[in-house]
Length: 427
Image (cartoon, rainbow, N blue to C red):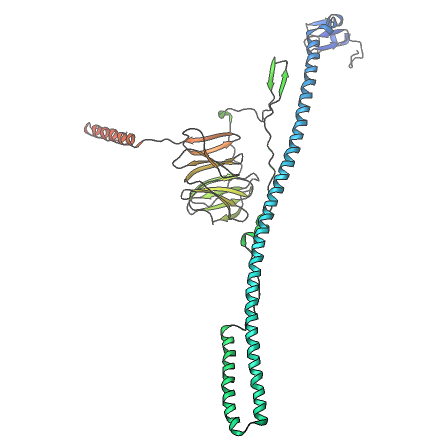
């Protein structure tokens, strides 16, 4: 109730400055020229019944209700996030079980094939050993015959026996040589060759996936007394600017060394990817313009390129009916989406590709399941770009053949008329 500057009791009110004044404030330089100064008693008379006080009271109550609605909505949002989390965890777990089941199946097939291979190799060795033991018994019998001849046979019997034993000896030596020549004495070992996809799985797959956070516009209806009606709460990201007020500023300059640039894209991390049409390759640059790498093993005749994330880009070709997803880390195609049409241009937004076919309407291709669907009705476009949920495209002008013929005849006749009139044909 006292003035902070003069330590005097408030007596007057200045409408010009909307301030309470003491007797010294009135004669100060600030309020010396003010005309609308009233006594304090007149200003505060029936103030509790004034429109301003009633409006503040109602607005505070309204604000409290709005805060309660917002708090309730935030609590519901927390619940939906928790439910989404459990749902995603169950989906990831199911997908993991599916992968485990598939790995178990191919492992069982591999083990079965391994057991069969080991069984065949073991059977071959056992059969050879059985034959070898039979030959060994025959040699033992020949050795016994030699001992008998040596001790009991006559010279004639020794002569005849020696000839027969020599034939048997030659036969057994031939068997030994045949084993050596046929590789029957080779040492059998078992090993395995891992599938290249499985071998590169741990190196190429750095993450199980990524969490995507989407902030949808709030549809909560809040009361706004000043506007006299309920409105949808919204937040403007940036004030709208007219095109003529937008100015360009050079941020960086890149020497691409490319001879036939067909597309480029700035990744979320700030790196630049440039595609070259012919020869077909991709070039990656750091945010400061330094060259990082060149990727050459891509589809031929690249028409355009767009970004999926910091590591994956999508490319289309003038000679291939598909969309190739290329890893900038490995330089290899990690996925191919069939489109059954040649493409001019594409963009990626909200987990889907928007593609401009060479001879068809604009198409949408979902990244999740590669399903294609036509956008709009008779939307023919050559180039397309996206901003949020809006598409901006260059419309393709389709002139029928008969119209081109009529135009050709018309301009041909016009040239002839101008020639005979002595006029310049080419204006």
